[in-house]
Length: 65
Image 1 (cartoon, rainbow, N blue to C red):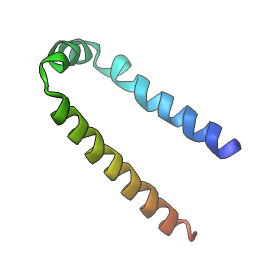
Image 2 (image 1 turned 180 degrees about the vertical axis):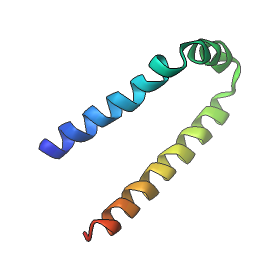
Image 3 (image 1 turned 90 degrees about the horizontal axis):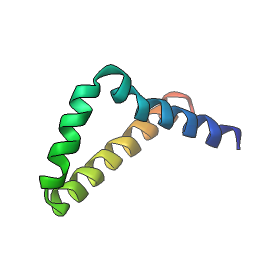
């Protein structure tokens, strides 16, 4: 449970960063997103999730377990 809450907290921090660091860019992205195809967004989501899995795997390998 402790690991889950830590991961959730980190995810929320990362989700909030763009709003703090570049709010104007977030607004522009919100205007562009409706014009992107569902297939493009799904593909992008799969790619980002794959990168996340690789990062987690490297992190686990680097920590010895």
